[in-house]
Amino acid sequence: MELQLYFYHHEINMSPEAVFNTINNDELLNTIAKLTDIEYVNNTQNSREAGTRGILQYNGDAVEAEIVQYRADRRIEMELEIPAGTLVTMFNIVPVEDRSEVTISVKLLTDSAVSFALYALKIPAVKKQFNEDMKRLEGN
Image 1 (cartoon, helix red, strand yellow):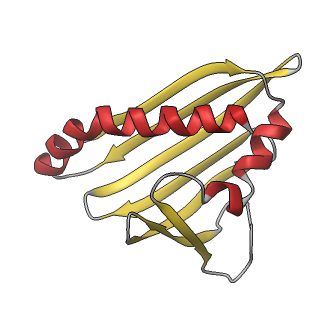
Image 2 (cartoon, one colour; image 1 turned 45 degrees about the vertical axis):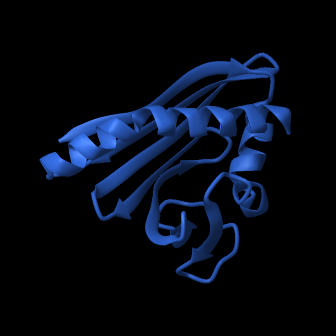
């Protein structure tokens, strides 16, 4: 089963390079609510390429993550393994003059009807958190 947890599609007043400067900076990423640490399995800091694996400390839990697709200053797609299933997170940036069209998608892939129902109830909280994080991004 697939559940869309979050979808964002807006133009923001930042260049694609400025947006990815934030996405590619672990110190700035650590300002996201509940994300406290990123540890790379291959012991490389700030590594961004397909196949890069790491452990995110999110809300006190270790979450295995892997970058499955990366295109510099344009797109990053990650898969995160959580007890409920797999979260597929995608950031896509399209340049529009001196601005960027930003698309973010977060989906849960699960075989559990219970996990599906529980996460469906979390959608408003997820949306609120991601929207707050996007406002912070635009403020940087």
